[in-house]
Amino acid sequence: MFSRQGAAAYKKDLTNTIALCSVCDNPHTKFKSIHIAGTNGKGSVSHMLAAVFQTAGYKTGLYTSPHLHDFRERIRINGEPIREEYVIEFTEKMMPHIPEIEPSFFELTVAMAFSYFSDEHVDIAIIETGLGGRLDSTNVITPELSLITNIGWDHMNLLGNTKALIAGEKAGIIKKNIPVVIGESMEETRPVFLQKADEQYAPIFFSKEEWSIPRYSMQNGIDLELRSKQNKILDLHLDLGGIYQLKNILPVLTAIELMQKDGWEINDQHVKEGLSNVQVLTGLQGRWQIWKNDPRIVLDVGHNQDGIEQIIHQLAKTAFDKLHIIIGMVKDKEIDEVLKRLPKDATYYFTNADIPRALPGDQLRNQAADQQLYGVAYVNVKEAIHAARNAAGKKDLILICGSVFLVGEAIDALKKQELLSE
Image 1 (tube, helix red, strand yellow):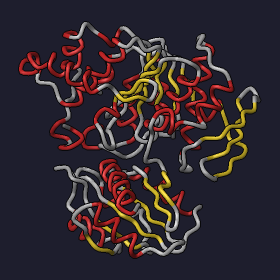
Image 2 (tube, one colour):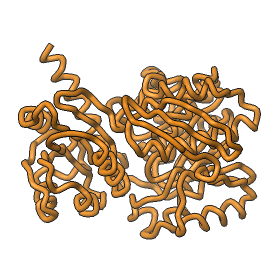
Image 3 (cartoon, helix red, strand yellow):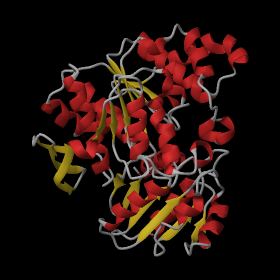
Image 4 (cartoon, helix red, strand yellow):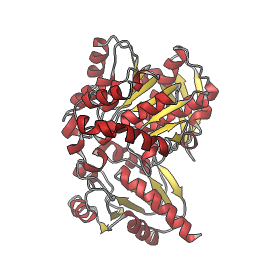
């Protein structure tokens, strides 16, 4: 499994997915979809779009990865995880074909998601790429709309070592005559998107040219005033924390506007209601998620250079006395690049998720010391949380970050600690 093992499990080919879908009677051709790629933000964008379509009354599939607690989180309809029985039945049905096709865990999961959405007759499915775009297993679909959130540094060993090369891989989801929305672009990546869109005769929309944010305030989520290119004003509340959501909201609104023009019945009230209830409607967790206060505990799945920079930006706007950071990372990330961006005046609790791909906490501590980041290594996230809670004052902030898997384990540990203290 790529999520546990890393690059050794990545397959640069769509052959297996095509073969799996063929066995399942090509389910990916039987539902409408929106396809989402990007280095950061694609999970938040996917969940926001799903929340709006659900609120508008559409039966909405949502495929994302990885999961925090339960495999079934990856495949949802109207926020409800795929049924256990379906997972078992699908896997049993595919078992005779596995020796011949030799699919990866991710490829099999994609085929399962597509079969589920087809069998359940969803009106639309929001499909998030796993890695890259061009050769990602999800890229067998022909969506109503493609969306690329941004380009940053992640998986360079697989996608390329320049932002233009990475953009080229993500731009692989742009299909002939299908509109594409770009969340963020820069001098290096904009020409890549324009060229690919031109080759595919795909109408291209840069969301920062479609919408702007004249005003916002952050308290229990984000209150926003948004202005469209046509001077339409939209006031809404987003229930997700994290200042980085200001970047994610723009491609969401641009995508919705395009879908409205294509005949999808979504009005402003659906948008407002959906975006104010993303977490409840879709089950999204781990995006500047405030667990509790006194001391404040925040969980964020930010784990690459750009993700950590967004967290640092958020910290600069947050009031607290002392900062405690519980961090664990996987071996194949640009660990030094992440560590050099972290604040030197925080107290660190180095640990690791319980997966083979995780870097042991003591090794992370040694690497962090080279960047003048100091703290103690803990054998698991439960011990690290216990130590941080004992050390933190009521006005301190405990931040848990560095790996999706670590945040998932942290949420489980926090739930258990709360049950024990009741």
